[in-house]
Length: 193
Image (cartoon, rainbow, N blue to C red):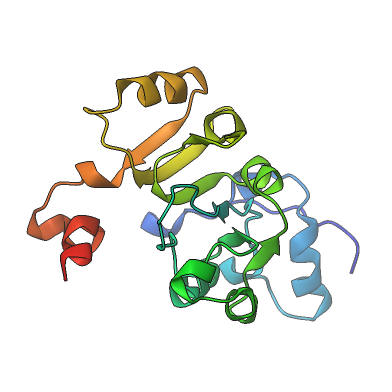
């Protein structure tokens, strides 16, 4: 079963969306198992290897902030969609969400902010990055990383400059239009209820 199979792509109208390796006759070790089992391979035998996107949720630094960027239920849905989700230890404590509840949902609990920010492709926060008590979240954001949070870009040009210097992709949740098509992403209305 360890042998590679050489295949040619068969065109069948719109169903010719097979991996490029099939079109070029390259060996495909993943399909060897199908042939070894005594049946012809199908498109289901080919599973593309995708890198998993890691979503990180740090603890909020602002005094009096009790919210956390996601709940265990939403984190479980993200994991089901194929994301890896990690949260900083104690991030949900102010919202009465214990680490054990997140762990039961499949979320990885990381001990500190530095390891969370360094290992996350996407960072979800309630409030934008801050510089408090020796913690500089702007510096923690990975170069070219993605941040989703309330940012208030018109009121925070300095924050935008710091994020641009990190080459960050930023989605300011407060700038999502409040229209029916974007209602699921309308975080401002959900806080008003």
